[in-house]
Length: 390
Image (cartoon, rainbow, N blue to C red; front, side, top):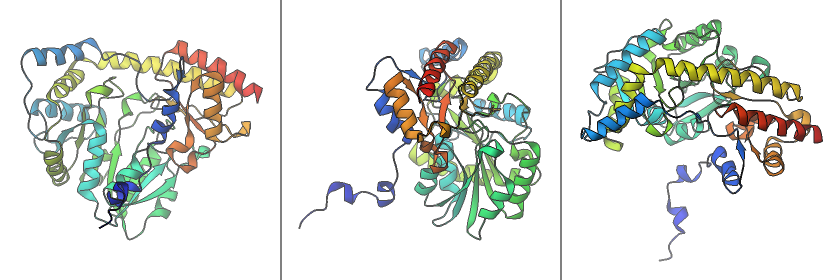
């Protein structure tokens, strides 16, 4: 019996998934020396000393065993206090909170807990590269709603309404947004909440960048009328607390959803790493001031990079959150991939093509300002010369 090629025997839905456009592009970057990278969304700050020391003490004290599947109760208690204080919605730490391996796992668990095969899940585009693939891996049907430059990449509630069908079950939100830095205002959030209630939708709100909101910060959409019972609040420590490698995240929501997420988590992951949980608890207890210092530095970088991009002729709105800008490069006559590839090869500056975040990202590039101001200044000088040469 002739065997099929190994690749053809793998799961079909996985074979159809694209690889990350960000990672594909940075395979090119890794082959070069002395590149100034405005690409990867990772803070350039070192995790603060008290967080690192908590992890070290945990190891030295032999605290290396499993925790509850839901996570350390003391951490869940701190998480729920933090969410109530800063996001204006309360959860029970015993049964409405789960600690996960980064917010990425929390998102995956929530998708798989909620979606049945064929259920439609609406997401906003441009978006983080994993959203559409994660919907597909949960056997849902992804439905995108485009967020436009003229709206500062915010979600237009009426465009959302147009995408809803009798198969729509889930709405995924990410504001502040990766890659655009877009946020929502109170009127938009109110209208989106009303639509979710009207159509009885579940909502996943990925708020990993919410501490890094520079103006007009609002509470989570989960706090709006009728939303707590249908919303899963997803968050983590990677961005605001510069803890990317710790892989610590969490989800808060109604018991029934968290319990379903826990079932998947306990079989697939058992629990989040104990050391990371200890470090996360230290972050919530002791690192607020350090987080604010990092945020102030990001804000200064944002203002510099936005002003620089506009001065060189690349239209760029001033985002109110996250640590990304999403300038329009159509004036150069290049596609997003052409611009990013040539900028890398000719100037040793790395940015991400907008198409890595969906096809409506064509005509844009993503620049991260989670790198030092000195490197940003060098990158802007080189990019100015590059744009002028075109």
